[in-house]
Image 1 (spheres, rainbow, N blue to C red):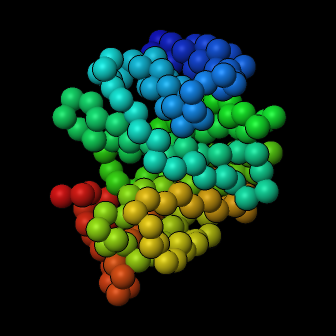
Image 2 (image 1 turned 30 degrees about the vertical axis):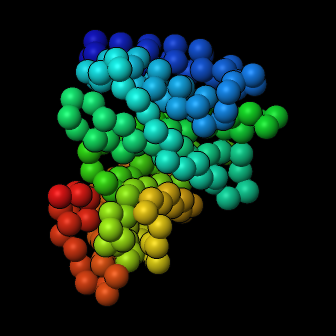
Length: 193
């Protein structure tokens, strides 16, 4: 309970600090985004090495919105992580929107809320282009969708959901298929090795 309260305070402070952060007069938008993500990771307190270097892989926009997901990677304690962070673009500048996540799996899922609309976000690395498609299914809601033709090394996919109730979309099941539409195990899908 105390840990949850402390995390809430830290996230509130981060949002208030980075909520007004703009990137004018920065060397580049990429470097500025990497710096914000790095600082956010360090402030999480999850034993991330202080020398961590963040690499921005891509920046994807939610269709018809000013909301972006930055896909990034970093190494810490001999592990390689893949993550996402949320940004809003206003007046041609990106501002940290207060949400991020990361993990060692090469395929991950999160949810975001944009203008009171809930989206599922599946992002990942298509290592050696082994993935052909992904299917997502929600256990508590009769809804599923497919991501077809994953042909880039990294991807971010947004899917508008037919609900605003988070409880209806967890847990979810992700199934991966190879280029010949054969089902992959989770290890084959989410792990590089």
